Image 1 (cartoon, rainbow, N blue to C red):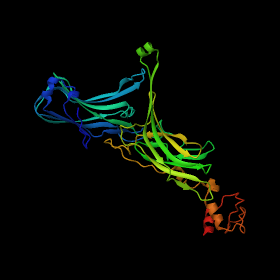
Image 2: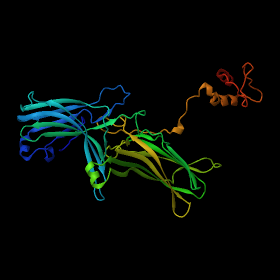
Image 3: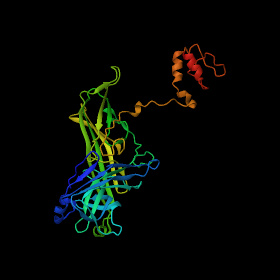
Image 4: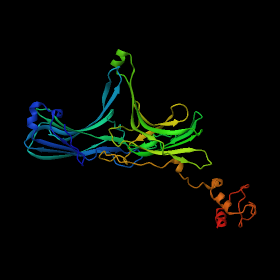
Amino acid sequence: MLFNETVCCSVRFDLSPNSHLDTCSKQANATMFHICSLDKSCIFLPSSNCSEGKPCISGKLRLSLAQAMTVRGISVQVRGLAKLPYDQGTFFQSYHEENTFVTTQPLASSHKQNPFNLPTGDYEFPFSIPLNDNMLETVSCRRSSYRLYQVHAIIQRRWNRNVTVSKPIRIYKRFSIEESLNWMLALNSIDKQWDNVAQYNVSIPDVNIPFGATFPVKLRVAPLSKRIKLQALTIDVVEQHEVKMKAPATYSAQFNVHFLSSNKEHVIFRERHNLDDCTVSGSEDSDLEWCITKAISLPQDLEEYTQDVSSNAIRIKHHVAFTVELLGVGEGVSMIKGTIPLNIYMSPHAISEDGTVRRLHIDRFHDEYVPPPPLYSEHQNDLLLPIAEALLDIKKLRLNCEQQLDNASFNSTRRDCAPSYETAIQTSH
C-alpha cells in the first residue's frame, strides 16, 4: 500500500502486492480508484465527569469505478491489536498478540446477502462507528507498538480476494487528575548536599508534563570550597518500558515459566551544556552560588516516544536524569548525579485531531507562586500587620484590646485579639 497524506486526513490507496489481491485480479482492479478519509486521525475519549457526547470514528469511503464490479458487500471495521513482546531466549524476542477491540459497520450489501453488481460511476459511503468510553488507549511508538488501532474499509468480492484500505487511528484518554493512575504527587526538586563538597538544588516546574512540551530545568550549586568550579551539566529524559504477562499454558508447561517479561529503556532527550557562562547569584558578602536554567524540549513526533502507562501488563515511566560536572574536588572531574520522576501524558491541547503536536511551554515554578490572602482566623499571617507596624512609631503607641480602637497602633509583643482591618488601613494613611 502507498499512503499519501492530505490535509483532510485522507489516504489514497494504490494497488500493490500488500493490498491482499492475487496476481490475476490486479489487472481487473487497475481501473478502480478509491479513497478512505477520516474526520479525525486522533480521538480523545471524554472523562467520566465530562458532558461530551459519545465518541465515534467517522469518515467517508469513496469509490470510482471505470467498469462494473460484482461485490458481496462493503463495510468498515475498527480493530484494536495488542502486541506485547517478551524475551523468550538470549538471541531473539517473541510477541504475544491478541485483539482488544473489533466492531464492524456495513456500508453496502444485498438484503438476501447475495452478490450484487456495482455499475460504473463514483460512489461515496459515509460511516460513523461509536466507541466505548472504557477502551484501552493507544500505546505506540517507533520502537514499541503495544496497542494499536486500525480502520479497515473492506470491499468483499465474489471470486477474488477482498480489497482492504487501512488507516491507523490513535485513541487516547483525556487526562484527568481525579481519575488518572499516573498523576504524580512526587517532589519536583532535589535539594541535597554532596559529599561535604557542594549544596545543590535541581528543580522543574511540575512532574506532570504534557506530550511534546518545553519546560525549564533550574540548577543551583553552592560550593563549600572556593577551589571548586562548574564544568558542565548534562540533562537526559529517559523512557523505561516494562512488560509482564502471564505465560500461555503450553509455554508454561514446556519451560516451567509462569510469567513472560520484557524490560528496556532509551533516551528521548539529551543535551550537554558548558557552564562557563552560568550566573553567579548573591552579593560580595554572601556565599558564592551558581545558578543556571536550561530548557528541555520534548520531541513532537508521536513515533519517538509515548505517554506514561500503568496497567497490569504494561508499565511505562519517564524521569529526568542530570549530571553536574565539577572541577577542583580532586584529580579529574567529579560528578553529581540524580533523577526526578516525570509523568508525560497526552492532552488535546497538545495533540490536534489530525495527529499533529503543538508545542506547549511550561515556565512557571511553584516557588514563584503567590498565595492568596489568609483567612481571618489566620490574621497573624496577614501582611497588613508588619506593614502597619513599619508606618507607626510603636515606641509611643501601644495597642490595648480592652481600650477603644481610636488611632491606635499594634504592639508587636502583644496580639491577643484580632486587629481591625479598617483601623490598620486608616492608620496607614
